[in-house]
Length: 223
Image 1: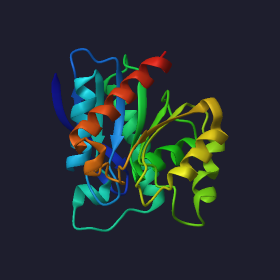
Image 2 (image 1 turned 135 degrees about the vertical axis):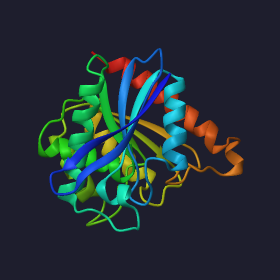
Image 3 (image 1 turned 60 degrees about the horizontal axis):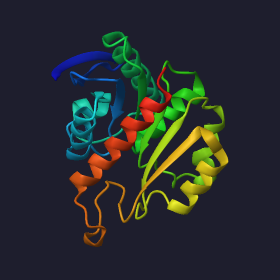
């Protein structure tokens, strides 16, 4: 496996941000993996998921937004977030042009990826949502409206105890999307994929399950 830290231009105004690319020797796909709104690319959840993905042949490109690269709290506006997602995907594609490319991430980053695609198509073969934040704004319907403008397959990795996404509402969204959506449910998992003891699993084991599902899904649709 090779690991490389690099920089890419998020926006002309905000400047460069950091990224980490992990490429396993047996890589069969590449996932641009963004973090949640309150974390960063080195957060335990994102790092753990990236490591689990690499172990099953999915290369990862973790990246920062201007606000998370700078630190100190706050959040960039949507325009900057969407631009950063685009630039991250463009950079990953240029770094590994021979690997089938996917994108998404935890919570906010998954949502920003689908919003960016709905705004203008991205050069990816699918989107991976690790805990899509369906609650917020005017409610589940509002958060799902833009999916009608997304034309690639989508994988939803969701916990049944996620306070930001009622699993019943997620199931309704996926049913409406039909064959375009694949839903993988983790029993008792919260928004950060921590699970109750009665699940019989640790979060590390859950991350392995998420990685295995993601790997099989990317293989099934990669061209």
